[in-house]
Image (cartoon, rainbow, N blue to C red):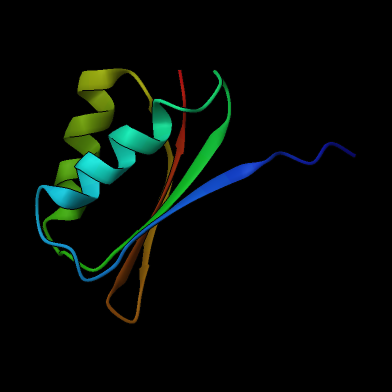
Length: 77
């Protein structure tokens, strides 16, 4: 069984563009293939992360929402 290290960014309470800024800072310190989980409360973050993923080439593996908290799982390219 393989266990992957998942890095985390808690961007709850931050408005655009800060969830993306914090994500870019975190992903820059990671190795290729590693996972990053981001939590955000900004409703605009859903479209922001789709666009950011497409632009940067980092894969948006999962996204969901529960109780007003948006969760994104990204894989560094």
